[in-house]
Length: 259
Image 1 (spheres, rainbow, N blue to C red):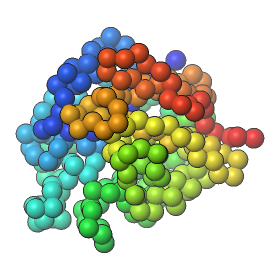
Image 2 (image 1 turned 180 degrees about the vertical axis):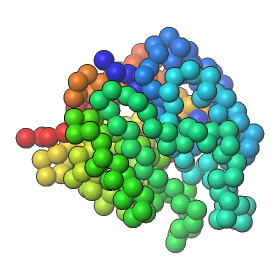
Image 3 (image 1 turned 135 degrees about the horizontal axis):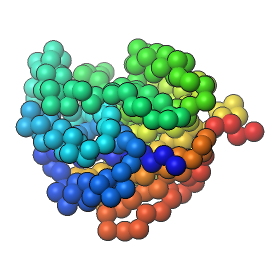
Image 4 (image 1 turned 60 degrees about the vertical axis):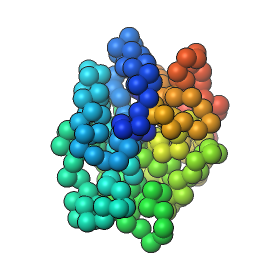
């Protein structure tokens, strides 16, 4: 069995020390094959926050790949840096961002869902650009045909029934294209509550899997991460809440052909 830990929204600068210590203990005890971090490592995208987050991720001692979240871009009140040099503070985590992972039977595909600017007031919401989608589809096309395809981005492509929302522009179009390309799951964060919902298209099922948060900014659920267990061509997602036993997320079984 292959074990992946899916974590999101740690928000260094507003992190929960007990939650990140608990996650580290889980990693040390269970040694997952990899950690997939789907964004918002930081709260305000400061150099100090990236250094703290990078040190924590490296301390886990397992392969890590990191996506960029909306909080990992400079805030609106720093528009010059946000528009012209949004990635200038990433040095501490640069090698982890969209890092390819060597996992037997699994390809992790990055999908950028953040934007420096948008034609709406709330730039924290998601957007999938045509270029980002093309890059993801090209990676899927090049992946071994017998691999499970896990797409990783920060914003949910469609809403998962949580209190928080992503309102990802072009998300539905992107999800349909990923399903047609043979993706098995899309991992995300942003909403701070876990979910796992199926998306069916033309006889193919993609699982939309959202992780909770390890920050103090909890919403409907306590600090949590996802434990994805892969056996052959099937996988199941367990939500791990701090201080509670793990349990499968409702509806979590497999993905792929539905006929």
